[in-house]
Amino acid sequence: MTDPKNLAKEIAKVLDEKKAVDIVAIETEEVTIVSDIFIIANGTSNTHTKALAEEVEYEIKKRLDIDPDHIEGRATGWILLDYGTMLVHIFDAESREYYNLERLWTDAKRLDLSDVLTAD
Image: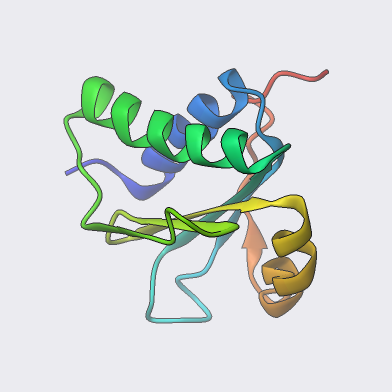
């Protein structure tokens, strides 16, 4: 079993490698029973958003031999990959602004991803 923070960092690394925008990780274990960590990012188009989700699924399977429990929203502007303790939310820009998950979880701590994200 992979530690949720290590999994979060690996997922963030994959998203960063594929040029996802505004990648954040929110530690939710203190504020919800749904998951330990949310990863939130967005793509620059619908095609990019779908490609990001596919790349996370593929690379995490290849690197850590972990499959998501399930995936929702492949045909929408909000794709959710459920890794049990980790929920990965990949939005198009408009949907991310509309749903504004960061605002809903302002009480939760942010996981520092500075060691895995490259600055552009």
